[in-house]
Length: 133
Image 1 (cartoon, one colour):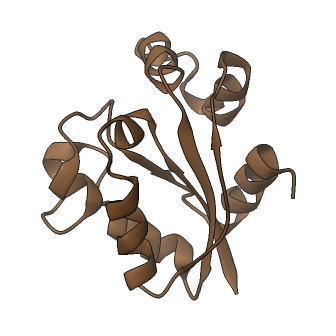
Image 2 (cartoon, rainbow, N blue to C red; image 1 turned 90 degrees about the vertical axis):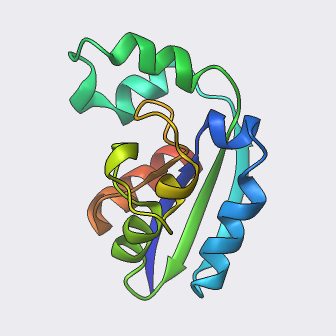
């Protein structure tokens, strides 16, 4: 059984979309095996987004990601990493297809509702980072 890390970002929490997004995950027959609401700090964001630290938009990302709580989840299922990436839609909200989470609800590339691991290997790293498992 494959696992992935999914994080509902501050805009998903603020806009009251957690239930809708969780319903989409569960309707796809994926199982949420662990969940917690957390508030991120710059230190963990620098680790999580290490590949973006030198980008000019990184300070704005930190401001956004620390603006409110996030919902961290471990999701399991067959091919769950790829499956969740399909459910989420493209990172750039204007490229996300209708029927995906971002295609239906995102209105900004910066505030794009959801993060999901991009590989099984990164999923395990991110699960350990946020859940200590």
